[in-house]
Amino acid sequence: MGITKSFLLELAHEVNSTKKIIACVPNDKWGWKPHVKSMSLGDLSKHIVELTVWTENILTKDFLDFQVDYKPLQAVTTEDLLVLLDKYEKVVISALNVFDEEKWMSDWKLKSGDHIIVEMPKVAANRFIVNNHIYHHRGQLSVYLRLLDIAIPGMYGPSADDAK
Image (cartoon, rainbow, N blue to C red; front, side, top):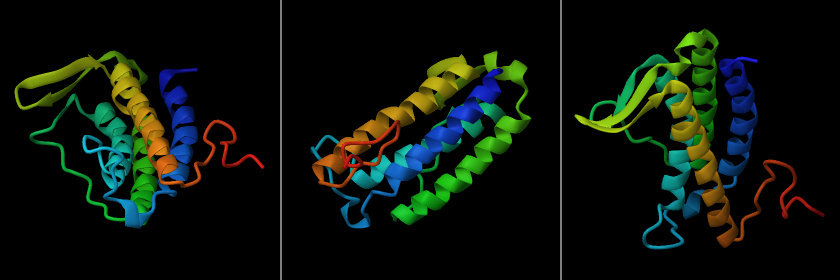
């Protein structure tokens, strides 16, 4: 199996998991934070969703420049996020379906103006900057929801809330 096919399989499973947990975010708690240094529930949810489409940037460009290319996600409800997640999933699938497998080892940069934050092969950027980053923040989101006494959906099998 090639790298592209493995990312397509992973995307199908993981976007479903992301949809399940994002759907649990209550609109009336978007500003809630578990700690003053934490992101708000809404900002964390938006960050998880926006990271999904970064795969398309990695596949089609050689860098993402925060000063030029980054625009904060404009969403104000959980429903907005779910619509965007569906859209981003389609964009990423389309980009993966036409991506040249040989280019996975070409470099991609995350930068801010002239400052290079990180530079690595596209395959590593997609794994570490997108996928692992999403999984990390989904775990964080599950803790936020638990602290708000909101049931957590199972993502890799049943959760304690799914057990009966």
